[in-house]
Image 1 (cartoon, one colour):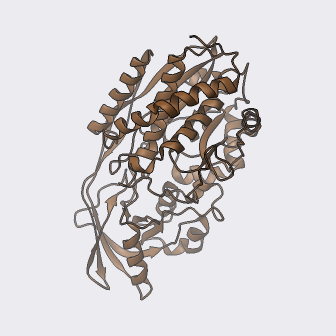
Image 2 (cartoon, rainbow, N blue to C red; image 1 turned 90 degrees about the vertical axis):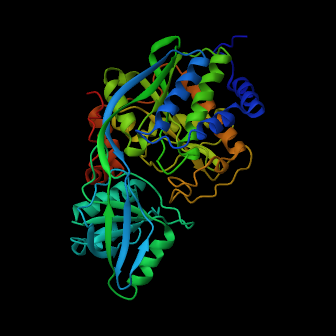
Image 3 (tube, rainbow, N blue to C red; image 1 turned 180 degrees about the vertical axis):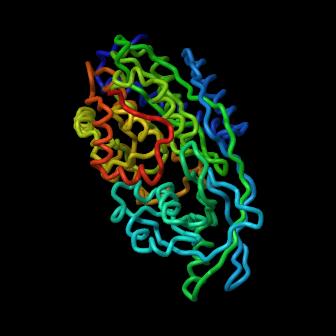
Length: 476
């Protein structure tokens, strides 16, 4: 039976809750997606994931469009890290995506440990960095990093390059002999070789440093190459064609991971919301555009190309709802990325359907950053400690990725009931937003979009990250 958009949020949520919790379609979809394995750009898994998404959408009754783009991809080769003084020892490592190859024989030098690699750490030791091999942890302590991107891996890498380091070692702050993968730049080769090392081997280096200088030799062999891939787009037409809500999730993962949490969970939820609203014949005022981005793990390449490709209609995008890493433990809320009017809208929506949605510190992370730069009101699902439908407690401080970007990001890390909660909260905000008449929040011009980022301290971060290399801009 067709359901009109005049149904209440309570009615919509009951129907949707029954579909998701009883039938468990989203979790089953996540299982199938994870069976593909890695979805890293340029791998067979990326192609299989694209086909999987397109087939799922087609079976749900959508016309699917692949929006192709070409980017600088990266292929992993060998990596070797050897301590040569004061002991002779081999440590585990893998290259960070985008890392160049070293010259034959590798890069050798003394290491300099800069703790968590906060702005204060780099400032304190900036005169010691030139000619050294910098080591930092993956931790982003909230007391020292505002915005959080000040302590992102790419920011730490950028500062290392800026101050003349000859190589970069990224130490996972979580134990378990798990190197934490990640990228170095957006759509450009890294300037210095970069590898990630497990917590235990980082601690070994720290113990050696406590006794004096430590020298290492780093060898990497990797390849950068041009690669064509795509974003996948499907529209559910609304009553008003020029008012659009975008629901987005990136389908790629790192090449050492199944990416169940990051971001198989977001993809599966996006697919199943698309299926559920189509199957129930729900009617909305605004058009809902379901988008599956490629190459997010290489600094939001797919979403940046999407913003460029859709530059003519950015002001028609009334909301970008970003579903990334939503399978993490805890209650849910939305990071509105410095858009204060959107934060008020989200808070009021939470009151309307009885689920508190407190404001969070803007993170400007992942695909959200491209949409914020493009001026589009953006809400990214995040964990919250304050409330949960099912009493789920947050188990992470949010200062590190936990299992993310490691080989341990497997489907057992996604609690099915946490996934259900993510689905309900995302759907309730989508239902309200897609039925709101007119703008949800103010679209920002180019100057206003930059002002939001600079107001929250992102100017120096974007500069040192050299982001974006793809010309993302809001309309003037």
